[in-house]
Image (cartoon, rainbow, N blue to C red; front, side, top):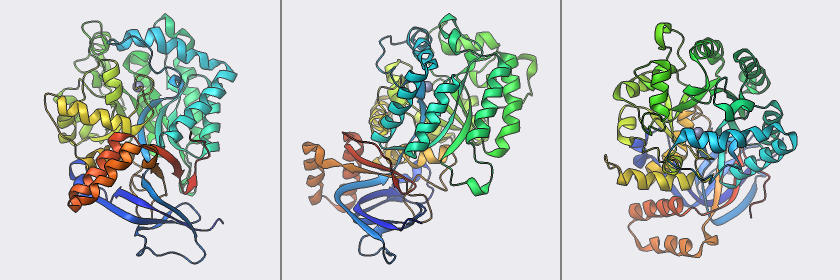
Length: 462
Ligand SMILES: [Zn+2]
């Protein structure tokens, strides 16, 4: 068994299991800190360097001058869109999908392209400091196999599944399967990657059932999917999809969904409430994550909260497609857990700190103005994502007993940021701590290295 080790760095983390509203009280900082990790990748101790318990023979690595924070959790990202960032065509989600995304995702049918895409995607996550991601996969088995191979080879943590589509416009034709084919392929992938027992609980991969969005299946498809999910969710299989993202006029996403399924609310499609099929199995549950939720109603938010669902908040993507702003106050006050999502490729960066930067700005400028504190931003990018994915017993904070998933950030690579951080030395303690964390997250410092379960992810960071 590999031996235990210690990293010395400036540590910032939340502690315990606070909601985002209580994050400020849970913030901890150890400027001359150390994290002690055992041979299995679990945290033994975290604290000030002169106070942590260091086992005999532990290797000590000195990273003083660098910041060590929990690994970032990306609760919404699309693997087949790794090359589809910055595609021109704003304002209409449906138009953007047809013009760019469906043809772009179809390219992954080619084994060579799929392999390169999987490697580039996993490298981009690791270089951004993302240690865990909820990933919409490809429709092609060859691409899914390449993705699993790269995730395993690099040791990243992921909840992942193929993106299921049985219906779509002409441009989506190469991505479509029949319902039976699609469910059979989902079943195979779940069997291949999802932990089967407690003995496999250290496994870094978990499976998700992922219809792209409401317009990708028909009413019969959602009924069948509900039955499939009912079979699988006892095993801990996740569910994710998009919800009420873009409301661009009478031909936009939200209006089209309501018209096609004849439902009062978008959420009805996922909640077993289509037409005469009311009462069918719901796709809402404790491991169900809905991306965006920008145009949700009070009633939908109540149902999401009651079922224990979470929301993947993707402000960069919402800005890019002109989708509006997720109503932070209404979603959080409803009791729904919120994680951050890059939503690459509508999101234009893999970096969760860049997403947090966007979140801070859009909510300051929204009608229900909210000023997110530095600790709330850290929560959104780390613990909130872990809570959303029901993984907060393992990850999300740096505490004894959890897995050692963290990222080292190097502010020295940005001279102005380094000077801003230095200038906090003369401030009162709490103000200095908040300012350091805020500058670190908003400024997007260079990732030095990314660590999952105590192992450094093998990727060159330029
Ligand atoms: Zn998305």
